[in-house]
Image 1 (cartoon, rainbow, N blue to C red):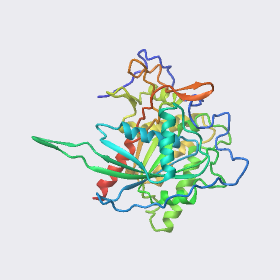
Image 2: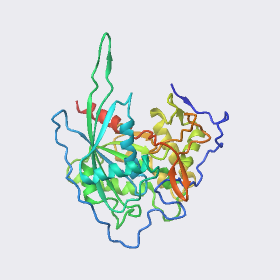
Image 3: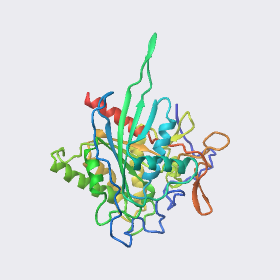
Image 4: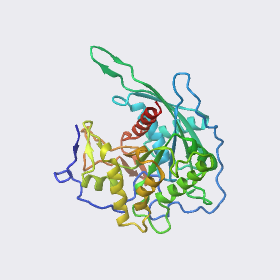
Length: 376
């Protein structure tokens, strides 16, 4: 059982109802004092790491894997999200089942080992990407067994899905008008599901000339529509993908404190703050409205309506996510007055404690289950 966290009963959290212009410690995002996404001095695109051709062959042990495309604006936390996904897979237990992640090429293997080591051993955030690289992973899992009266529990279903993602340099935002490379675009076009990383800290305190989440995704969605129309896969102007909208950096004080104040957060039996699934879409709408109150334009407020006009309503789900999670002190409990899992050490953002991902693996499992049910 969960219960709303009451900020009026001695939690030590300021009664804050709107977003401050706070820069997230430990984020690869550019601080508000610097223009995020500014075009670099050279307009020559960075080299593209050769990619393994995408494919979705039937598995000898079951149906073809579900293909996921993960996308988000540069400097929006994709690299940390992917590194945290590997940790979330390792940590998964009841009620998620057991999971394994495997790289499908050398570039993905290097990323998996080095970026995970950054978080776990170095207590630091992954380095900023320097080249355009395609990554591919296979995730296998076994869902929890199903209890049966007076009989052994039924074995859990075996699950497999593949993840494709294009990682780009932080300054490579809409470089020469391209939100994504041709290879990355092809992979997103043929994906069964899209995982959209919406970084609210990109828009909180955004200054004139800085690119918004809306600008990245608007161009991406319209380009995908054109490509799918050309191949006959566009459904009356609607993209066919299932979608998980991941509102990232839930642990950031600029995001978490206002959400806590507005009673959008529950504390679960495991002591971890979460936005309940049935409240997640409301949370997304609320965060867009709050950002819009102090925004230099209306792009963030347009984001929910853009999603509604781009995808089928019943194929979109929302999640409040955190790649690094919350600080848990010696007491072993979450403390609302001291929850941030990042700190500055000699001017460098570092992790205070262990990585405890929140809602990183769950969206993928939920989408996979939904797509399988619809295909029966």
